[in-house]
Image (cartoon, rainbow over all chains, first blue to last red; front, side, top):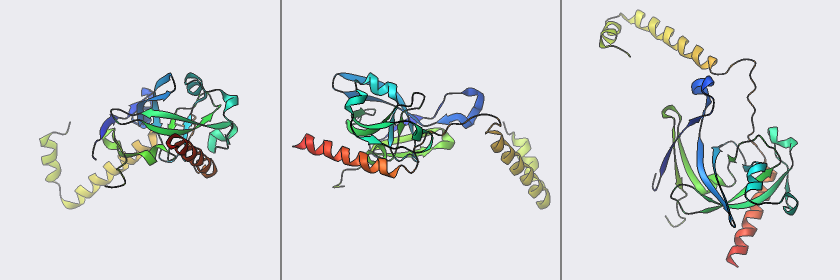
Length: 142
Length: 71
């Protein structure tokens, strides 16, 4: 892939051995004067990006000011969610605007899903080698 | 570590013994795969799979935000 960066799969629980390796992408989220560096789970099965409640607070969002409500699915269906936008900086790539479902769930990882992380970045997974490669989407003119 | 002696021994086996060894190894591998998921342990699935309405709403907010930036 052109202009690509390689990242390792990360294990958060060594007791589970190889089963527990996940593609966590370290990146920075920016909003006005606030920034948060965080590792996010790349989830190709997720329809949307998900922002944990605490990370939204760190970025300075006020829950009551986010007026667009969302209904999520799976374990997240039981928690309220609202739409927020933030700038994301991945590696050395240009910043992109990401849209998140900001959930009131506390123990959820930051999830990067189809809308709109995978619309902005191409990702190739090499699970057997515990690596994945990320590159920005190709310009339309290419 | 697989030694060259072992490889040499395996290559020396007749056809049926090679199939037998292969079946043993495939069975071992399948068993190991099963062991990756432990019983009586919770594995929460946070993935918002098939949240199509939420995805549609978020795309509209994103497009509105981008239009505002370009105005």
